[in-house]
Structure formats: C-alpha cells, structure tokens
Length: 174
Image 1 (cartoon, one colour):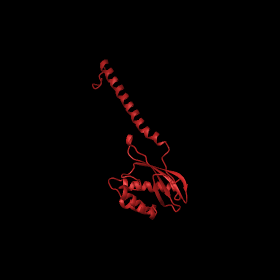
Image 2 (spheres, helix red, strand yellow; image 1 turned 90 degrees about the vertical axis):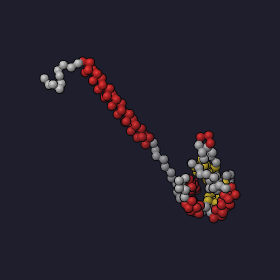
Image 3 (cartoon, helix red, strand yellow; image 1 turned 90 degrees about the horizontal axis):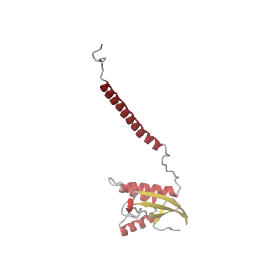
Image 4 (cartoon, one colour; image 1 turned 45 degrees about the horizontal axis):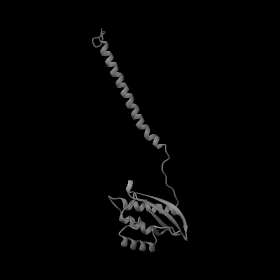
C-alpha cells in the first residue's frame, strides 16, 4: 500500500474535493467564456465597414472640408495650437480680398472669422449647396458644446472658380 494514497478515504472529504474541483473547473470555464466574449466583441465591431473620406482636388466640398479640418486641427489643439499653420492655411485657401475683409470682421467682432466664433468647434459637416454665379457654395455646419448646450450654426462658404474661398457668411448667397 502506498502511504501517500491510503486505500481508505473518507467519502465526505472526497465529495468536498470533487465539488471544489467542479467549482474550480466551472469558474475556469466561465472565465474562459468571459475572456472569449471580450475578445470576440472587438472582432464583431471590426466587421463593420471602416469609416472613409474621399474627394478630389477640384471638388468644392472636398476643398472646403480639407480647409476646415486642417484649420480646426491647427487652432483646436489646446495644448499646442499652431497659429503659424492657421495663418498659412488662410493664405493658401482664401482670396487676398476676402482675407482683408475677414480680418476687418475679426477685429470688429473679437472672434475668429473662419468659424465665426470665439472658440473652435468639436465637429463639422460640409455639404454641397451648388453653383452660385461664377463660384460654388458649400454649407459648413459646426458643432459647439454637447448635450443641452449644443449649438450648430451654419456657414455658407463661397468658393471661387479658382478653388479659393471668396466669402464666409451666415446666410446663403442663393
């Protein structure tokens, strides 16, 4: 007889050990299932189509979306706003005449003329509004705040035929 494993075992103890083993295995299985469920959850989320943005250089909506996205990124980085980049973007995207008018508006209103506000929006949407005269009008909807304090002003941005912004207004030129 092996001294480590006596032939005579107490049935109560064996039942308790078996119950403990079943419980441990049961917990292990449920932990495995939970772990698998948490691993599977992102896989299910990733099966959705990824977000994409597309456009072409000559397209008015793309041009305005590019400008507002880059401008808001440059000005909205609260830890390190890039005024130099914002100025360069204005020079690249705005007509010289409109730049002068915009600067006069900003001085008069003590606000940034691109979003027509003192702060930078958290989100924006750009929508085609069609041709206007020799240019093209695009609606930019800005989202400021959240919850009950959300404000969504619309700006009407006029792009001249040479793909430069000739005006930003709060009413349509149509």
